[in-house]
Length: 228
Image 1 (tube, rainbow, N blue to C red):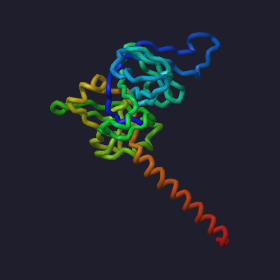
Image 2: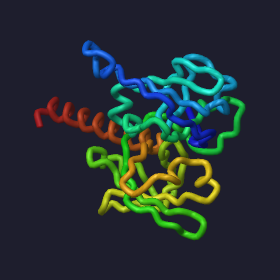
Image 3: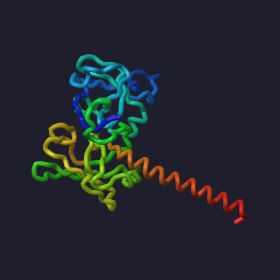
Image 4: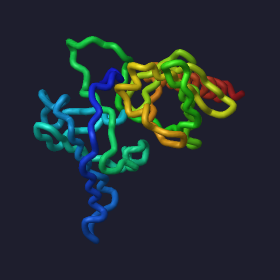
């Protein structure tokens, strides 16, 4: 579990694609990415630890004093923008939360739901307003996005400022402090971001849907028993 408070910006230093290394490699093996300039989050690192990279919970498979490696499985590549990373790109990182730390963001699983595209980026005083359009295949996620609620964008816990159901979009405001801490500041129109909607909404709406389904089945069973 994570908080959505980004600890450090790391740099992609190596990308290994097993499918291109030999003719017998399986393209479903995923990628292995090395992230350097990472000493700030590796002082207590162990093999098998979870580190959130651009919002995706990934497992450390190897590390040294300044870098660590993670494996990107096919599911991760399908759900996120991580497959588009290039050497030299910057990524947001956060270690899994500890039991004795302050809980300043919101409950982030590191399970990216989908990507969204930046459709507008406008200055507002010393802040920046962003508008994002959901992936067309994941428009149902708009049900979990509410004004003044939480959303995770590339791993960062941010507050939703508006929801536009007509264009399937939502907005956030990036304050000056956050601009200095997040890779979102340098992203441009049409760039993709990883999003994870608030887990509270998932459980709440998911539970309602399941309860309705159970009630419908029970009602249908009773009607059949009565021959109706």
